[in-house]
Amino acid sequence: MVDLPVSEVGTPLPPDAGTAADAAPRIQCETSAAPDGGPSFSAGPTPSSASISAAWTTTGATGCEDLVPAGVPTRRSWTAPDTYCYEGPPVVDGQGDLAFGYDENPCAVGIQAFFPADGSAGLIMRPTRAEQPRGLIGRVEGFFVRAYDPSSPSDAWARALGPDGRDEGIVRPVDSSADEWLWPDPRGGFVEGRVVPRGDMLGFDVRWVDARLNAHTSWHPVLSWTGWNFT
Image 1 (cartoon, rainbow, N blue to C red):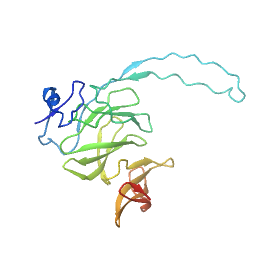
Image 2 (image 1 turned 135 degrees about the vertical axis):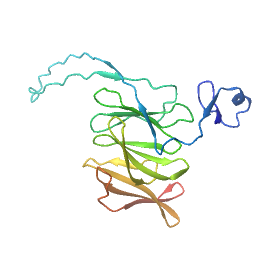
Image 3 (image 1 turned 90 degrees about the vertical axis):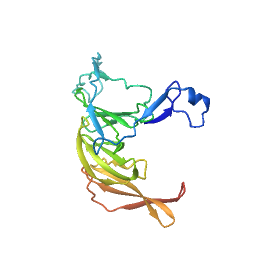
Image 4 (image 1 turned 60 degrees about the horizontal axis):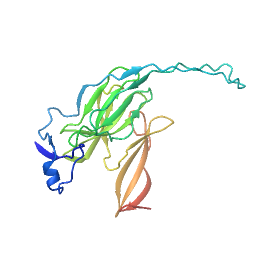
């Protein structure tokens, strides 16, 4: 176990916080090896559902006579545990299935809760000592997540996940240098990015891949930089 001092509101204190850190409550981080070779999956919550009433008003605008509004969908909600909810906005796939990232404490970050569009319960995906999932991307149905070995952060791979978060296996290795690595292409598939050495500089390349992350173009250089000065 490793003890981390935290403030009264649950925010980690710096190691030089002195007596305040000594007096604050402490969180214990588990450092033993993970029981498996990937992230941990468990049953997730079922969001609460509430009906929403709405009245539609006919405007009489020319050309809109045959437009019929759809029914108002139910409102679904869920409250994430604790106060560590800073893993970015929710990610939605092409079918409306949603994933929400949150942290439980400084030791358990990047947890993902999955919510299928039909309102049923999805799964909770947690990092382990063997795999830290980060960078979730929605696909046509389900998600891709970039994950890495915490003991070797330069080794990263893409894992496919179903609409409810179920594991569909590792797809292939991917770059781990860039904060973001994959962007949906409106024409289908994705644009993939990587950071590479380019002489005494670093470069950023992109290529186009299909919905299964199979490349159908070569890498194209986009920019190069020294330090943080882009050229």
